[in-house]
Length: 513
Image (cartoon, rainbow, N blue to C red; front, side, top):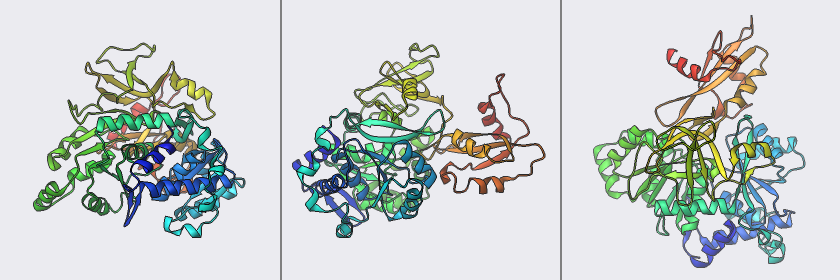
């Protein structure tokens, strides 16, 4: 089975069931599947061939989900684009993945104009609101969605074919495309369904960005797999819309990142409002992912709302869910739970040997959810995929019950509100400034489930430069969420004997300022 055939099967078995609600619109499984077929036919007519990479640059909307599945039905590979990136950063991904097409909506018209100047060979198409289908004839013409045009598309593909390229930062500081197959994603959705007890009766609220691996697997593929309903919001802002959707949409599963739970656990609510919230709410469980969840937040949230808050762990290269605390059975708040069904986990030392229970080492995982590799990067692939195991780069320990405890990250990756930021990328930009001699960026836990990026700079001798100039220099060159929250100028960096900057020492020094 492929992701496209999964959707078709649901359209046949439960055609009238609601698949997506968005604002005041409702789309049945049959309607979504029919739209997917139409757009897939349009893509084939425009020259999309099997295994072509097609990027999606949209904010949250039904058109995003339709485009994603249409790309797969046409035999292509979807390349979701982080909407917080600058046009230059997006162009890097489009070039690296050799994308032939870019589908976007009017929120990103200015980005598209800049991208076409950088990559003149790429074909770009705007896909706006579904009711405006007649206004977009190049892609959306029902008469071209014929079986003949669709041949050579998904019909040639197996579940071991790449479905999506998800870009994530790596050891070089430049994004790499993790190749996730249909089998990777479907097996992960099936495992999550078992652990979270998801059924066709569930209604899953989706306000996290659709380009994120966590949100798409858990909030799109999983509910479609179960035949459940997706309650889609454009974004988390304003948060009042999220609260309203919980009640109006009768949400049963709430999926979010730690910062959202931290806000909810501390948000001021009158006593009567809290009582009504508990009385009227339909949520049976809350799931947290994409970043570490502080234990204090779990206790505060559960005490306040009397709803179980389940923490999980994953990474893009694992489709992404690796472990989740079970809804039924023992929950250990300080851990991320045991591996989901079908996934194995172990901890290894520097010599590569597996360590006994309780000892800390690098976490490695194995299972049908582990990526095929990095696109066109065999050396990087060999570094993280060894003998069937994915080396996560995270330091962890596993107890005797098989529960995983994430201790630290082996990599310097900084996670800000569930978004990955690799310091090297920012450092490379800063080092190009004529007044900068050395720099280093570190992440400091903020106690709310996120991290604060701190940038240290050593100026060149006699250079005159301040924080304002650095911020102006970064503006427009990197995405806003990658910008440091604090800039500290330093006379000398702490270094190892080989001249490498000791970032662990820098993290300690932050407390001094």
